[in-house]
Amino acid sequence: MSATYKVTGMTCGGCARSVESAIKSVAPDAKVTVDLGSAAVTVENASEDQVKKAVDEAGFTFLGAA
Image (tube, rainbow, N blue to C red; front, top):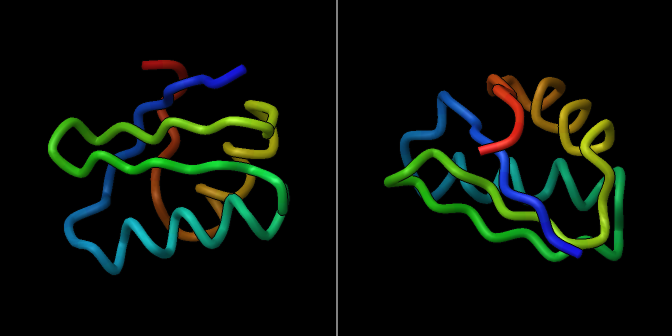
């Protein structure tokens, strides 16, 4: 099952890769898709708590479900 979350502070491809890497570091089997235009991150195979922790630790702002 996938879920989409709002994440602010991402401005470029490097930011998107940082968020993806951070999420995969806490949930190695996660599938992550970042949409910079809508500031959304769609994640499969990771809990909301895992995503929030990873995003926060990467220096971005997790706003919850989109």
